[in-house]
Amino acid sequence: MIIWFTGQPNSGKTTLSLELVHYLHEIRKDITATIIDGDSLRKITRNSDYSKDGRRKNVKSAINLAINSDTSNDYTVVALVSPFRDLRELLKNNAKHTVKEIYLHSSRLREGKMVEYYEPPLNNYLDIDTDKYTIEESIKLITDYIQ
Image (tube, rainbow, N blue to C red; front, side):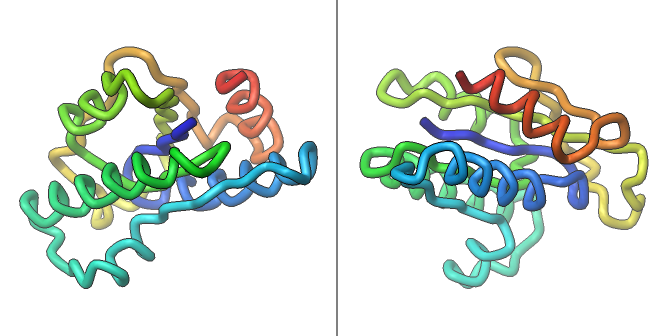
């Protein structure tokens, strides 16, 4: 299963993805999980281009990694701004993989960090306002959603 965290920078994607993997390992020691984080991916691919084209390239790299990782893991967890709805929908509509999209947002975001062309999901996703829920409450919402 691919669990795809999306949302503006600083909305909690990395924090919740790490907590989710930790939680999954606590309840089942034999779970295999890979985390694909946007910042780490950019270092690996040496993509420091934050333009629309650079972001599309980064999302496509994450999709390819997620699809390949999903074949050998119980969970592949992606934490990436991924502002383009069409790319996220393309992944979700891939019949070979179960994909759960989790949209995180917060009113605490700093305007300078916002991606102005971010496209929120429209269907088949879990919506979490990280202002309203603690990390523990968010993990409960997520685990209920992915079951």
